[in-house]
Amino acid sequence: MFNPFAVARRLREVGLVGINGRNAEFVLRYNPRRFYPRVDDKLLTKELALAAGMPVPDLYAVVREEHEIAELHAKLADRSSFVVKPARGSGGDGILVIDGRRGERYRRANGSFMTRDEFDHHLSNGLSGLFSLGGQPDHLIVEYMVRFDPLFERVSFKGVPDVRIISFLGYPAMAMIRLPTRMSDGKANLHQGAIGVGIDIPTGLTCRGVWGTEPVREHPDTEHSIVGLQIPHWQELLMIAARAYELSGLGYVGVDIVLDRDRGPMILELNARPGLAIQIANGNGLRHRLEQVQALERHGKLSADPAERVAFAQARFATV
Image 1 (tube, rainbow, N blue to C red):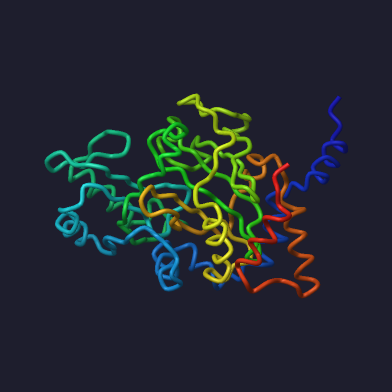
Image 2 (image 1 turned 60 degrees about the vertical axis):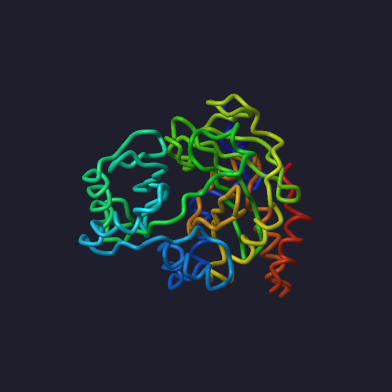
């Protein structure tokens, strides 16, 4: 028989953080509102990361006005692959991945082609704010298209996987890799059908996955195991997540990182309100880990050294 008290007790035991708890105890308390533009505007995030000497995809162009769309074709004439993003987009909406050309048509990542008129119309919609937070007029960034690490060839469908790490006061608290599927149309967003796979913080090994609400151990499209994969450059990824604290000024932040086969890890974007499915992917709750960092805060023992923060996380935040 369903016992709501037993369920509530079990959730407390595993330390599951709900959306109200996340917002009240962590987002509102640790994320100063004045710093939100640093993560809500991908162009500003990129500029801050470059100033801090942190890796990001190369910026090819910025489109701020309608007349600049026509000029963009000439600017990109020598490039066969690139990505267009709304600077203030969310959830992957409006992202356009171009990985080839045929005459004057652009080939998308899913293999379909766009005419120049369709390309222009998509960018015009982006400028109007169709894909952006609050629907406000936006600007678009055009950047390098990441070529994913060969490790992911068997566990990704067309798109580029990314690693999300929750960083709390600069301590990497929990991580997962998001694997595109046929359902997600090559995108790495879980709500669009991608898989979330938990990563053990000490080792960088993948543990278990979730697809929607279904626990999975194999990729549904390739049927290859998603468990036991060693994430490349793991120490470097953890350092990027730790340094994102100083970069953003936000205490509770989601750090999205891609692994390029030639250039290694690069920051894709930061999120001031990262989702909580990462707990399901890991089969562990966030609360006990966050409370350990809060204990350091209460005793005045938070470290200003990102390497020390990474070492603390690797010593204490194993996925069980």
